[in-house]
Each structure stands twice: as structure tokens, then as C-alpha cells.
Length: 361
Image (cartoon, rainbow, N blue to C red; front, side, top):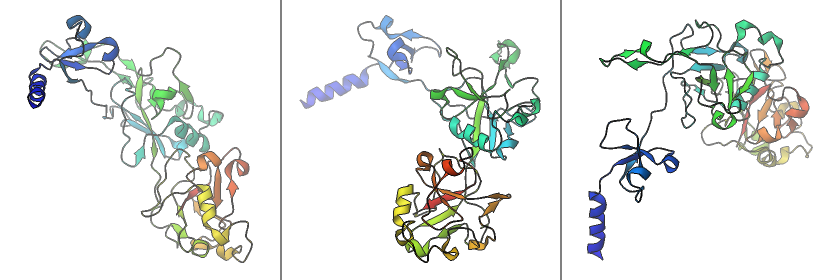
């Protein structure tokens, strides 16, 4: 038996490794032969009709695009004023979107889903129904030195091996800014439409074509420089013996699809977990805790003289939970701990506005 195994291993080790396969080779049986020049297409059914799976070598790989195309007056990115400068479009090299790739926004930004992007813009004045944002100057990637849209010039190498763009195909328009879920939703921000206008690939249109780049949202962070006397967070000592806190975050627009992070040693609970943990501060229990001194965040708490914390003149009202994207429940900053409010009921047209932060346990 030992001799048989060793012999089998030697046979495998001594077999030629010929076929570098592709992600669709199970259907096409095409492969790149290891002993031939790059680009030589061979077919396993033709070469080895009875043994198409043998002589496997490995797989072909391509590097995901990562370079910003910065050859315009915007330096390859345009920050959208109507998104409070928290949204930008990043121009990427190439004109082909590769759905299998995870494109990268710069540090401090992340690649959102289409829903996150459009919801955020709608909550900040970039709704398609807002005619003020439908002017020529407000096109998503208008100007920036381009006559119409950004372009990609396909290049080739001359007989001396030097890159010569005059030998390539004509320039390709780049107008589709993609989202992290565009491979399945087919949605994009059109470079020539106003910010927040949702476009979708037409039936039969390739999701890969006319790629311009990606949309980026600024990553929510803890408010800097401790904006109040609570250092940006309030631990609910009276109600929970210090096991629950409200954490103030940057921004006044809630992003439902984003996974917010509590500080180290704490986690982001569901609404039910939060309300059950409050014990004697349950909204169903009366008592002295329903006084201004025990209200959550505001009404004179943490150095805020007004009813709420504020950011750039906008009240910060809603502390949300990990399941608020489904329930829309929140803890109001200006009321007692355990008071359950609902953003769809309170602000039917603007459920994402007046964001304060998150509850943590």
C-alpha cells in the first residue's frame, strides 16, 4: 500500500502542468498553455478530448484597478456640495468595471451601496425632485476640464514596444460611477446627471461598460475634540449601573446600511436589547427618573444649553440601534432614557435626518 501511494504521488509530481484556466473555463474549456506565449488560446476539449481535466497548472489572475485617474481639473475626484462634503465621486483608471473587484476609496472614506448613496443625498438636498440641483453646473461630474464626460484613451504599443495612444481605439466615454452592490443592482450615478439621480443599466447593456469610477462616503467617526462636557458620550449610570451609554457621532444624517462602531469593550445593541436593559428606566415605570436631571443628552446635560446637541446649527436628536434600519426606532436625545420614538412616525419624509449617534452596551 505504501509503495502504491508513493508511486501515485510521483506520478502526480511528474505530470506536466499545462493548463492555466479562467473563471468561465468550466463552460468554454479554454485555457492559457504554460509552454506557449501569453495570449495563446487553447481548448481542452480539442487538445485532450478524452482528458480535458488533466494537466492542470493553475489559474490566470488580474489585478483589481486601484489607481485614480487624476488628469483633470478636479484631480480625479469631485466632492459634492449638496452632500455636505461627505460624498464624492472618484475617477478611476480604465473604462471597464470589474464586478469581482472591491474598489477602494481613500482613507477616511468607504465604498457605499447604491441605497446608502442615494438615501444620503436625498436627505441632504440632492433629491431628484429638488429642481435647484438640476442645473448644468451641478452635474455630478461636470466641468473638471472635460468637454463632456471624462474619457479613456485606449493605447497600444508600436513596433519598438513604446506605448502610443494614437494607435489605440478611439476614446471611450466614462460616465458610470458604481457602488459596492452595482454588480447585482446595476445602478450607477451618471456623470452627466445631477447628484442623486439614479440610473440603471438598460436591458442587455453590459455592467462593465463606460466605467468612470466609484462613489465614496465619508466614514462616520466619533466627534473630534470632545464637543461637550461628557466627552462625546453619556453613560446612563442611574438606569443601568454604567452598562449602557449614548455615543455621539459626527454628522447629522443617519446612514442605515452602515455598521457603526461603539468604542472598545462596547457593542451596538438592537432596540429591544437597549430598552430591556434599562430596568427601572423602562418607559413603563414611573418615578423620579422622569425628570430633567435624568434626561438622556441635552436639556442642559453635558454642557448643552439647548434641548439637543447641535452640529453646524442642526439639532442632533436620534440615537439609533443596530436594527433601526428595519424598525426606525430611536432613543431621543432630549427625552428620558427608555423613551421609544420612531423616525417614520416623527419625520415621515425625513427619517434619516437629525442623527445624533448610537446606543452602546
